[in-house]
Amino acid sequence: MIYHHIAALVEKAVETELIMEADRIYARNQVLGKLNLTDFPEDIDAGARRNHAAPEADTDTSGHQTNRSIPNILADIIDYAITHYVIDDTLDTKEILSADIMNCFVARPSVVNQTFNEKYALSPQAATDYFYALSQNNNYIQTERIKKNIHYQAKTNYGKLDITINLSKPEKDPEQIKREREMKQAIRYPKCPLCVENEGYPGRVDHPARANHRVIHVPLNGEDWYFQYSPYVYYNEHSIVLSGEHRDMKINQAAFDRLLTFTEKFPHYFIGSNADLPVVGGSILTHDHYQAGRYEFAMMRAKEKYTFSMDAHQGVHASVLEWPLSVIQLQSTSKQEILDAADTVLNTWKQYSDPNAAIFAYSGATPHNTITPIARKRGETYILDLVLRNNRTSTTYPLGIFHPHESVQHIKKENIGLIEVMGLAVLPARLKDELKEIESFLTGESHQIAEYHVDWARILKHKHGTVHSAEEAHAIVQQELGYKFATVLEHAGVFKHEKSWRRFTQTLA
Image 1: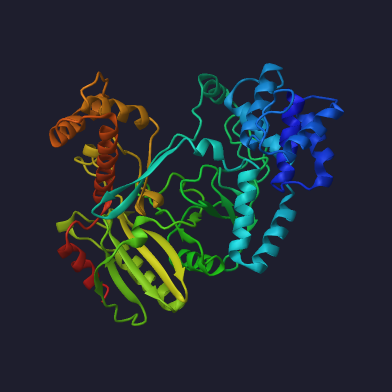
Image 2: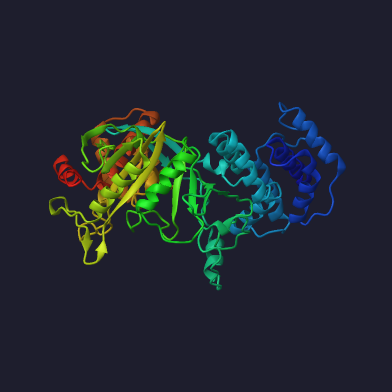
């Protein structure tokens, strides 16, 4: 069977243009070496080609499945490696071998970058289309795992919000956890999962395998920056733009400039940055990076609440958005004018306090105010959304005053980062089964509701009354989860009322 799997994988690599026909034997031999195999039956390769020529067939004459996806074929090969003691049955060893095998089919970084640049000369979209397909076909983007995610849209007062229950990332088994604890070496290479040094890195117990990983060199304003896709994409063409230097994230005018420069290079993409302070920032604040992609989030469809003038920046259209978080949108056809206006907003906000709104810029010398910026380009117009953030905590709200409060933490307790800010909930995998128990409760069936969901479940029961079917219960829970996420975002907004909003925007006049 293993020879059929290898032949099928090579065939798929040719089909998806990971390799050329002339690379077939070389790639096959490379895979054989990874599995400690030293021969290959001649008739197997011929059979794989015949099956490829008849794509309507589900099995060949020997009963072997045909036309499987690369991840499925690769899974079969990994199963062989485990049962034949090539590797241990642990998460890290499986991930390392999977990436190592797929690296047999991926061109060197210089070739990938050259091809990207040739495509870019035709159009920026042609370049990203090529690289996105490559990243999927070489199994760096975990397409099969991503299919497990639950994703839908829920109507709210802020438009349709995206709800995702993340089921794609594999859970660490006890043996994996044990191996990581036993790691005695303090390895500092690569410094973090976002460093450019991850390109081609084989991986180890405490660091992900990246042998099949490639990045594109995309200089921004005289600095080395790199472009890659996320292995677990949360939205269409979810990508990461990372600094070549391992340095802390920093929101300043130079960051705004880099974001806008990226939109000039890739006008079909948005790009944004997490805030640069704990609580309101992302999970990795020690490496300067942004997230980009080709997707329209609910925030991008938000209407203006009101407009205001910035006398020093007459060429900029400034407005406050009708959105649960506190967002100022700047628009201009002049890049320099919008950068100057954004710098004014940032510097004013960093020093701004409003006791009536529970906003204080500092506790002693510790800063609390910062911004989550998102950039787009529509035709000749630059658009910069500046989401005002504050990371202050209190006795009542120990995780953050402008953070999901206790009433919604049974749904979302983690930081509200860039993706959530724009209207896409990334919710924990535990909710898949927990929500089913609530649905059973609504229909009067036996259930085991997690204690932290009990109050919410009772509220839903009182609100919706008798629920007659599982389908109706499912629809109710999905919609109510959307309302919960909207509340999560409202908690993260620094201005709860228009009066407090206007007090701040008046300081920008």
